[in-house]
Length: 168
Image (cartoon, rainbow, N blue to C red):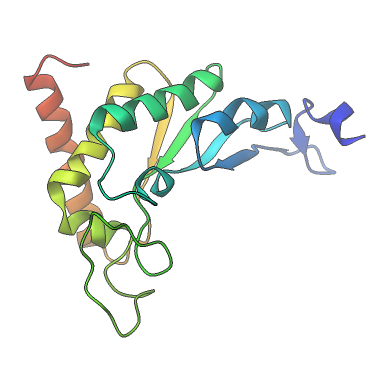
């Protein structure tokens, strides 16, 4: 029954249509999510590109992963969550001091802001894909308006760096 109705719009009993976004950990999961009835990807968990390795993925490697996911969505929106690491999801290449309560400390967006060059690599990779595909961006674990403003400033800088290099 679920397979038969998977491609129908999700709607409440009073007819309100609800967008269904899949959570994916890699690009290979995008097309199967559509087949299962998702309207797009509501969360590409980019931290899986960074985990279980000694280095961080290059800008080009990240761009390929995001582009492959976007292509698998056939014009539907992809939302990429920037690196959500720390606590339960450590990244070997990004030194993280031991914290009393790592779930509340330097993780998510705060970890990205602590490594601005790496953060801008990820932002440039995302921006390169959004030149050709519908894409949204999610910053994880935002605690203050100042963190959001810093992240937006890094996004603006990443866009300016691409423009200066002649990259859409």
